[in-house]
Length: 222
Length: 295
Image 1: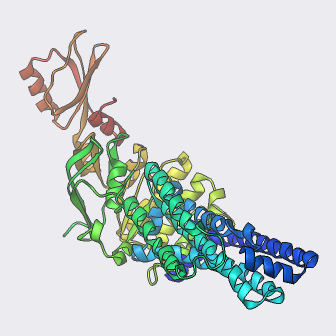
Image 2: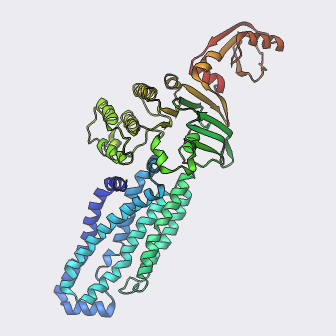
Image 3: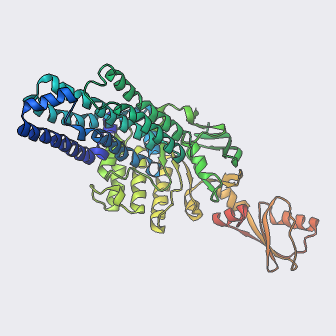
């Protein structure tokens, strides 16, 4: 059954997933290209100095890219479910409804994780060749909340999409925007260091919100 | 024998608007029951409650003896659900959708029933459902239900958006299948002619209540349309047994389950100034309009 759920989600998401991998990795590649040019022009030592003294991370363009990728993934995945109330078909299947909903969310999270892993892979392929390990870690630690924001954006958008009433959708959207704000409080290296595991926990706890929307859908709220 | 489906004392409101109050009905095993009602009488509401997507304000629906709200998921294997407008996953093609559903019904899935219908449709295996016509989509939805091979089929407005050919194809195919396999079907449609060919029993709903529930044969045998001449300006005041009496150009028309002799007796007792009383048997559509009124 789980395989079948993943199969359905894969059919919805596969082209988007390919596009998201290409675009997000393209933006990551562009950031690294800019860094490479800066190193060529000013020398690696200067870049290291700027990174240490001014907390520069050189991948600022990436800041909202995972968030956008997460939001779009949820739209691509859950809008067809809400179109003409297709979700009724999904919930009617002989599978526990919570397992069904969380498996759908897990499918999206796994695909997003795959997409983000490719991004990080691109960075890890290049950064250690020009930066010491500490500075590479700095860049990745600055990017970590942005990637978590990608997952949060995905889970919050799923919550909004699955909500059956427009009034509450708008309300959820506003709450979602405030929640996402927490991931962009300090876009500098190590800012979230001690808090990162809690932020990750908080992010994945957001998946519970989608069940609230589904429960309201099941109760026939309109 | 216990009924396959039983709704007990259902009451539902949308906000302050009452849809119905204390609605109860049952569907016996192997019967095809049609729920007939004008727009807004609560047909889709009933289907939504029956399929567990709407919590009634009070009352309960039992399917296979289990409350639909707390039913174990495995029991849903035996309930085929057709949503209004033959909604299916539009992003899948006909092969993908069959592959997806088959995983949920191991041991009961009849792949050949689905592909037999698809062969009749002459659609390519890779055709995406969103690019199909309404008629073709209805056949995909029907094929999936036939492949699921459930004991109970719940169909919401199966004729919506279908041309006469596809409506006939759908209802004939469904009727033959349900009768041959002894399936129980609960359905709604706004096209009454299709129902007459298909259903064994009917429930006719009016705003907020059930007008009648009985086998279609019995309904058509006992319900009659009465017409008679009355003087110009006569305003009919008849008891409740006479449904929606109206006078147009000196001809009074009404529907009743009373036999002609009893009608004559009541008219005489009420001193109705009538002449040329005629009693006619009606088809299901006329029976429906006779009982629910034209307005």
